[in-house]
Figure 1 (cartoon, rainbow, N blue to C red):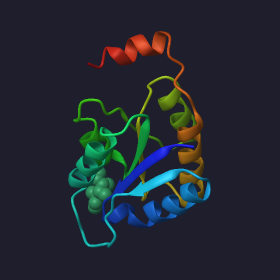
Figure 2: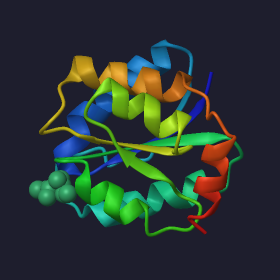
Figure 3: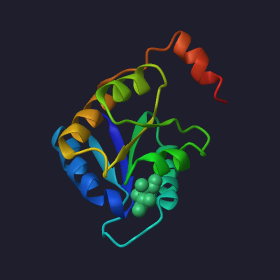
Length: 142
Ligand code: RB5
């Protein structure tokens, strides 16, 4: 089971609530960093709240949700140590862990429905990093 930090903006709050329950029911240690209302807010602030929390923990993952997933991935990837991947299909969710050692999954609530989002989160959290040549490449990020 994984430690999972979750945050969204107003566009992602309903999908976040769904995934908090889904992942909690599966036994993951889920931390919902908000927001808890649909009042309009700025996704870079939510991304920063999550990346600050994530970098305090060993071997934890993050899930960020906005309307498209694009803004969250752009914002999160500005933070050193964060490898955030926008996933819209199962292959993305698997490959971003296996090849890129992603530590943050970004989802678009206006793109991805609840059922697929649950599958993407499950795949993301259960796929190990393959290391080897992929480690060499990921190390070149820094
Ligand atoms: C909010 O309207 C929307 O711009 C935001 O959720 C996100 O999609 C940005 O990338």
